[in-house]
Each structure stands twice: as structure tokens, then as C-alpha cells.
Image 1: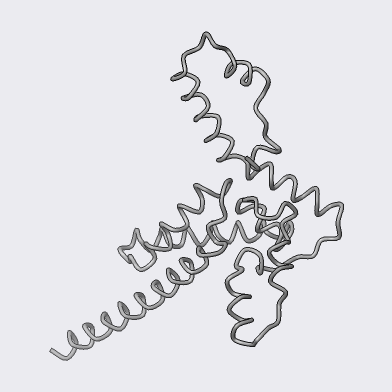
Image 2: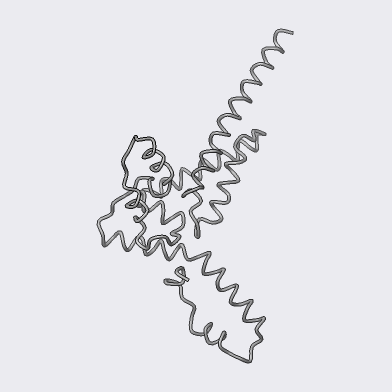
Length: 194
């Protein structure tokens, strides 16, 4: 598999798999654990490759176009922009391997992505505080961000169709908060008049 390129198994593991005295069930369990471990952590090694690649090459930052690639597509269709989508897709040096959230944000913003990660953490805390105060408008985006946190080493949930989910969750939070505030204001006015 392509995610094996930077994170190859040690020779001892290969020897273990080739040992005929070990049962096939044990080999299957260990091979599955190896593959899951490699798949989950390969994004860190891909990120390292992205950083090294961009140190050698002159970095052409995408400023969000790589991670949120749905937006340039949409603005091109609307005739507002004329981005070279192929160039945006090819910003990752190894093509279509998963570079994880770290790699995608690095391609977009370089080391300034660290500031965005702090902002994302602050926003998650805000969502959590809102839910603690019984305002569940931010529950969908909070759950989405939890998934993003768990898989950030492997997969960039903000990229591709994840952008639709993110936008939908933000719109839901805004509309739900607006409707809740409007309803509360009307109830408050009715309470005063009676």
C-alpha cells in the first residue's frame, strides 16, 4: 500500500509472518494490527515528507484552497474565480495520499497553521461551553470536530465532502441560535405583558 512507503514494518515482523511454526490466526491478528497501526499513523510520516518537500521547493501556499477545495470549485463554477484546480489538487507532493489534517493545513498555511489549530481548540471549547449551558445549537459541529480530532493523524475531515459538513453544521448553529433567541424574546415579551 502507498501509505507503507515511509513506515515500513521491521524485519522482525516480516520474519514473524514468514515463520511457519506460528498459527495462521496469530499471523492474521498481528497483520491486521500492523495494518491498522500503519494506516492510522501514516499521516505523520506523510506530514514530515510534506514539510521536507516544501523546504526544498519554493512553497506555494494555497491559503485554504487545498483543505477546503470545494470552495474554489464552487467559485469557479459561479464564474467568480478561475483557479487552476489541477494545480491545487497537486499541491500535495505525493498526489492523492492522505496527508492528514496537519499536512493539509501545512500545505495551505505553512507554520501559521499552528495559530489555526489554537483557534480551532478555542472554538471547540466555546462549543462545549454552549452545550454545557444547554444550548445544543453547537452539538453537531462539536461532534464533527471530535471526529476531526480523533482522525487528524490519518484523514483531513475538512477536505472534500467534509467542507459541506462543516458549512452545514455552522449554518445549523447560526440558524438554531437565531431561532432560539427569537423564541426566547417573544416569550419574554409575552411574560411582561401578562
